[in-house]
Image 1 (cartoon, helix red, strand yellow):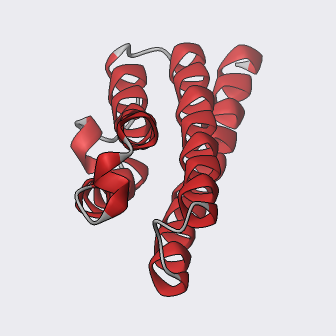
Image 2 (cartoon, rainbow, N blue to C red):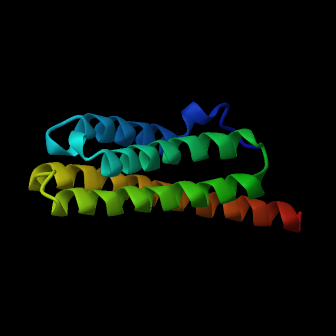
Length: 128
C-alpha cells in the first residue's frame, strides 16, 4: 500500500504508543487507580489509537486505512475527554494534565495529517 514496511514505522503509531505508556503510568497513580471505570475507559481509548492504526495499515487498502485512521483520531478525542474528567475529579495536577493533553493533541494532529495524506493518495489512485 505504501513505502512504509510495517505499522511500527508509522510516526503516528509511535507517538500513540508513547501516549499509551504515559496513560498507563498515570492510571496506576493515586486515586485514579481506584476509579476503575475511568481508569479502564482511559486505558482502552489509548490502546484503541494504536490498535486502529496498526489494523488499518495491515488491511493494505487505502480506503480502509483512512477509515481506521478516522477511528483512531476519534479514540484520541476520547482520551482527551477522559483526561478532562480525570482532571476535574482531582486525579491529575495541572502539570500532569497539560503534559498528557499536549501528547494527545499531538497524536491527533499527526493522525489528521496522515488521514489527509491517505485520502489524497486514494483520490490520486482513482484518477489514474
